[in-house]
Amino acid sequence: MRTSMRSFLVLAAVATQVTAATAANKQTDYFNRQFASFNVRTVALMPVVVLPSVNGAADMMGQSLEKSLAPVGYHWVSVPALRAALVAAKQPGLVDAVNEGIRKGVPPDTTALRSLGQIGVADAVLTSVISTWERETIDVTMAGQSMTQIAMTSYLYSTKTGELLWSHKFQVKGEGPYNNPDGSEVVGVKSGGLESNQMRTSTSLDPPTYEEIAVKLAGQVRDSLPPPAKPAAP
Image (cartoon, rainbow, N blue to C red; front, side, top):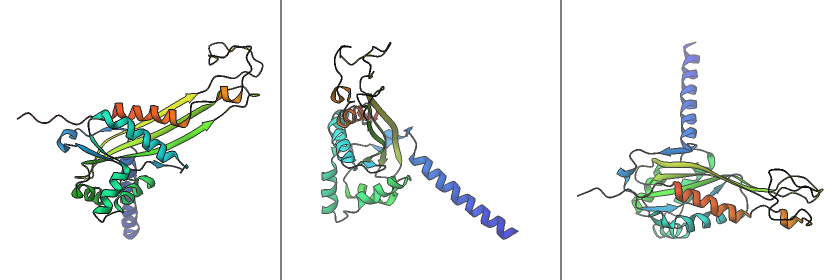
């Protein structure tokens, strides 16, 4: 009985640790109260993780983030520049080591994060995980609305300690005009600029493109990301 109870307690402890680690990585609205003390000035952009993988999604979202985040005030290190710096430091595998935990739904490897800091690449890294990347179109013979939607959670991790500094979940959905196959108007629904007597086509019913939604989502990240802390007064 003692052996069984001991085994049960060990399993319970392991389960608690796994649950805590997973929960820590899935925090969607978090800000470290000690943020200013980390003195973050340089942030490296990590390759965007897409779950499940979709061709082109990571590059499109990554480019939108790089363009949108420039005004925040940090010195940004792009993904190519980050990889080049790690190759020069003979540690090219650090990017994959950090993202591996992100893909598995657990906090990134603390040792890998600290190694980035020791190399001097950045004070923090911004990792982003896309959980929704979908686009639905409506046939001209069907009633309804088309839509494009992207959901993503971003995390800012310190490369000094490996601690989570900030995280936030974002979601942007864009819809096309409502389609009534019989051509009648729908009360309370805009027709998207088409007159009721105009023939609707698949093109006129299309929702926003992925790129348009990605740009809007990147703008949300820019507006939510904490700015660099002001230097302490002398």
